[in-house]
Amino acid sequence: MFKRPKGLAVMSEQGRNDDIASALRQVLSGDVEYYEIVYKLCDSRLRAFIGAHWGRHGSDFVDEVAIRTHERALRSLAQFDAERGQFQTWLNWLGRSVASQVAAGWYGPRFTALDEAADVRYVPSLPGPDELRERQLRDRALREAFESLDREGRLTLLYHDLAGMSFAATAADLGWTVKRVRCVRDCALRQLRRRLNSPGQIRP
Image (cartoon, rainbow, N blue to C red; front, side):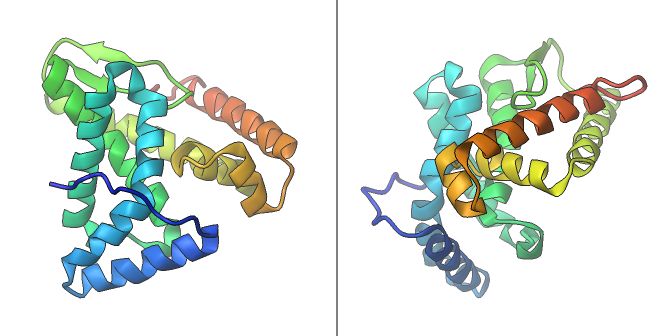
């Protein structure tokens, strides 16, 4: 079980990513104690991401999701592909799945959410084969809708919504103005909603 770190020195975004990558290599080589570094560097953003989307369930819910997400990440670390994106983004995606499982355990019904592009739904039954298939279709629809966005739109959602970075931090990392980040992100969300709500599309 992981414990919340007492604090961590401020560093640049690139320095943070480099330290995460270095620690991950050590973990994958067999020294799991290095995950503590990963935990300290990623936990606050993971909790901010969880809180932004599921904070209404309370701090205990956020805490359980965060802890279980780190535990799952450590078990499945070999699945992370650094060439496809940042570790924080991958970790936050894991958090989405864990949040659904925690909510199912807390409340009974299955819990699903799509950040700002869909509603939260509760289904009063355990998922069967048809429901699992529907979930797979929704996940595929979301991935395809996301991949259909232009590069700038994807970046704003990756940085702000998935990696949990503020608008200011996103703008600084991309070399944009905050106004541009907001505008591009708003446009990307509108496109995402239109794609997900189009006829014949499986809605998340």
